[in-house]
Image (cartoon, rainbow, N blue to C red; front, side):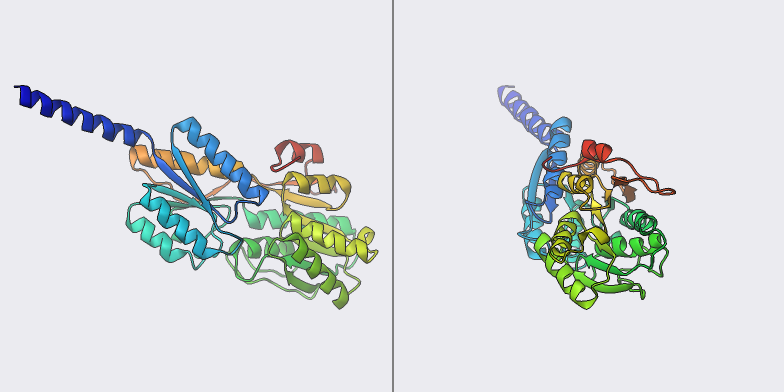
Amino acid sequence: MSRLSTLGFAAALACFATSTMAAQPVIGLITKTETNPFFVKMKEGAQAEAKKLGAKLLSGAGKADGDNAGQITAMENMIAAGAKTILITPSDSKAIIPAIKKAQEKGVMVIALDSPTDPAEATDALFATDNYKAGILIGQYAKAALAGKKPVIATLDLFPGHPVGAQRHNGFLQGYGLPSNDAKNNELAKPAEVVCMADSFGDRAKGQTGMENCLQKNPDINIVYTINEPAAAGAYNALKAAGKEKGVVIVSVDGGCSGIADVGKGVIAATSQQYPLKMAAMGVAAGVEYAKTGKKVSGYTDTGVTLIADKAMAGVDSKSVKVGTDLCWGKK
């Protein structure tokens, strides 16, 4: 009886340990970088939701935007540490897919945040801004702001082949009413009105260099589309150095606090604001649900986008800088 009691006690301890482990799901978050304010806010959102729901969050990132190898290493380490859900903002939408498939074969649910894979179906689900819609909104605004003048457009894009870069670029052209590609096409449309295209990698310095080169090609540019607000700030610096900042409409996407401040200062005419904290929180919640019930999420969930402008334009739905400031992320 004594031995049976001991065995029973040991079994009870094992069951308790197992239930305790099951009670704390392990979720991984892999962002493109650790320094971009967008991803800093995403991590904050994931941490807050994990704490709220009793999950353990592991975080990792590439060394820079485009570091696919770094993201693969982070994924492998997280799986080894027991993660059953991995949230990822893919740096390379195609090259990351083999690593995602390996994770899924081990029973890991993989959710893309912000940026889809190519094809998007490679992940179990996607929580992200409708980037095509974000582009449409700033395209509509740019057209209204130009007030009937002939558009002479420069685009400061992300880098070739990335779905987010393509969707924002092509959405912008669609919103302006120019020939464009649809949301599933990762090629950048270039109608005649686009006189210069440059890859900025979402970087301020590269955005400035790209704008300088575009002005050399065509000094009459009057509209600048930028992939994000750091690139927009770089474009403005180049325009200001050339004495052309007052005659050019700059539009962008992101909605970070510094970008919204630039809208208020007149550096950026309008930006489409997205919500990284919401993406991450929804991803963590889905991971906890998967751990508890085995139910996976699927398909695309739109996490919202709002046009923020200092000066409203007739026929274009926008919100004020104050609204954008209340909802922004990063340092105010």
